[in-house]
Image (cartoon, rainbow over all chains, first blue to last red; front, top):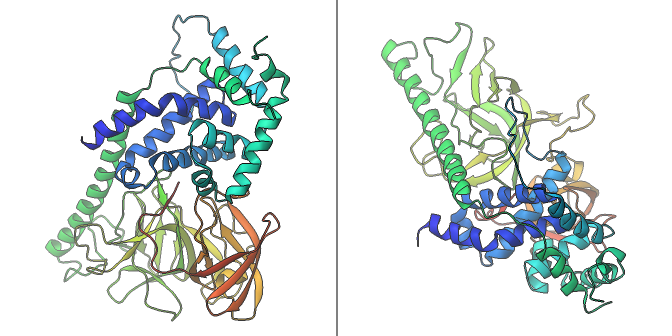
Length: 165
Length: 298
């Protein structure tokens, strides 16, 4: 399998999770798609390094977190003005916005550090040790942050909206 | 804590309408990015070669030395054959930090001098960078926009990584030796070549700050240092050298900020203890060996 095929297979498999992870980090749905693309593009330009990484997912999610922090710091999401507006008929996106907004409201009380732990442990499914390595903290810190994050989520009235009756 | 919480979160996330993966678009964009890098590097080498050939043919420069007299250059200035590496702002960068005094070697090549502390460092510079020797014989470095970023005698600071040369031999790079590939903007340090502080107050936006401990931290001393921790606490430049945490750290900034301004105490020749208000415990640094070429900080 050559690099492009390997990258394509990886991007296809991880795309949805990267977008959802970006939403958990606090992005809108559109921003989340942008962030996932930026992350994968950076991976592509140094795919040989990504391939050689001991833990590919940990490496890629570290790029995701760093891209997210960079973008927030710069207050710029990459949009550029255009002379021609890309107007076209689209389906009513209200439902999409509702779904993303519900997640955002449920996660609103989590700190950035807690969101990152949720992303790495729950969505990327990294181990405590892998998460600790990516974040540069002790495994115990990962454990306590995740516990606090889940505890906060459990008490979120917005998450309760999704609970079974 | 509620055991249902992860499931509830999963269910909410599953409802998110994720668009299909734009794999083809990513491949095209990625290939364009790679091609642009190669093109810039090749164009830089071709332009340098053309200038050398022009200088030899017209006979203005005499032998093919490294300060090239191009026919289009103003009579009072001379372009310098500056090796470039194709890096552009926004591209991936390596983590190593470098500072030195901008100068020219005996053959007219741009170097970073270290004030008698070791041999000069040769570097490849970001895409579009050029250098010129002015009428006074001082080299001036210009960025891709043509703006002057530094001149001879000024201490400059930058990020990037060490590695082999550009692949093809370059007359201004030592054959077979490691060079520093500059992968950041170049900032002029407020500290002058002579080492004394000048009138500039802040270091500006560059993360490469020269605190007193970063520049000089003898055994037994304690001083303020600034550690760049964008990719976690791992490397720091202390006492003018590269140090590494013990145990080796890696990852993301433990505080969410890139720059940790704390204090370091040099407890022995090979041990410095870094303390920072945002960290629960002091961090021990040891002198780093050769920079890991695979360590990349995005």
